[in-house]
Amino acid sequence: MAQLQSQGVALRCVWSDRPLRPGNADIDHCFPWSAWSCDDLWNLLPSHHKINRQKSDRLPTADMLELAREPIQEWWSLAYQQGET
Image 1 (cartoon, rainbow, N blue to C red):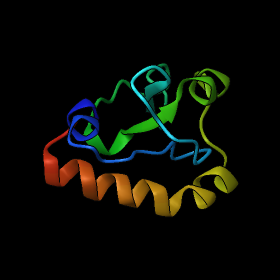
Image 2: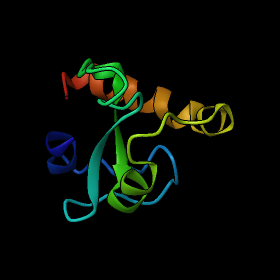
Image 3: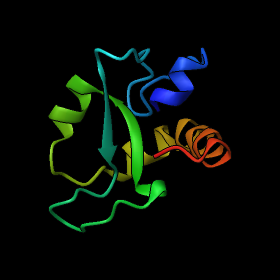
Image 4: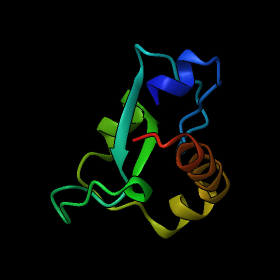
């Protein structure tokens, strides 16, 4: 994520669409670490730090995932192409 930001790529929270900057960005485990200890790239998503803390160790709802479908797919495309984690 930091590499993309340093290249001038404007990143947004997959859950809230808020702009992400170094001071407010977190990496969220879509499926929480407490439920499944998975650090695979597909499970790591850019999130605004306030949204990540609100979600905490809960699974995203079906509605939340549906609303975030496009931002998640865009992130995967960017991250996989750049080899980001």
